[in-house]
Image: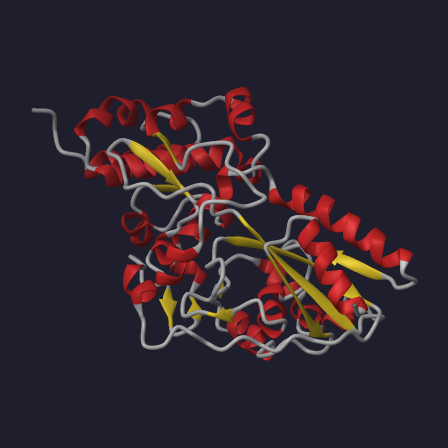
Length: 335
């Protein structure tokens, strides 16, 4: 068995559902990142502009790199459910344990094994300045779909990516064919028009607005966010390839994908940390979650939220106060 085959097998033993190897060279279509940032489509995510040059070639991040091991870890175990009145929706990835720590721990073991073979490498997850989806496509894990996500023929798109930049020239895997065909269900499912043909305008995306965007959400963007309080899975729910994603994976859910809006808006700091402290949503912070829950109340159209929103209209926090007043204006008067 070659080192490349052994490395992929070690990754699978560490919990990876899919694994592949790509050459360490400029990521395919990496130059499009600079155009995307210059067009302002990254919104306020300044880290893309700051790290754009590094992201285009993994060797700028790890100069010794000759190959890239890319692994996908499924989180399909948290099944989607139809929207329930009065509930805030949470993207599947966000109800699991914080995948950053979980995947780093798994890949640390793979890296340790690699070093025992006399090679070396550097570990990456999605917080690293690496275009992991593009390297994943080059490594044969799948193809970049019209929703800009990496889609695997075997496990759909509900997976997180981690990997290693390796200082050895390993046999690469062949890129997977693009199997989107003429399907445009993901584009049709996006309520805000954030998705074009394999191009995302983050400024319109609900997942960007309710997680990455700080402060007051622009008024013209609020209605399209529906009842999503953390992330958005609509383009993935619409993708036929996720019908084959299964219900298992290394990453198992800690929370349901829908929670009471009233409960979420009322959480204090201690309650927020107790509920979300082990999940990726800790970085959203209590204020961000409260803002999103209050916004979702307005989009729900349920008059029963008027009392909460009337109280929120006097909140000393200007972001929560503005959001509550807007949401209140969206609700019918009590009968």
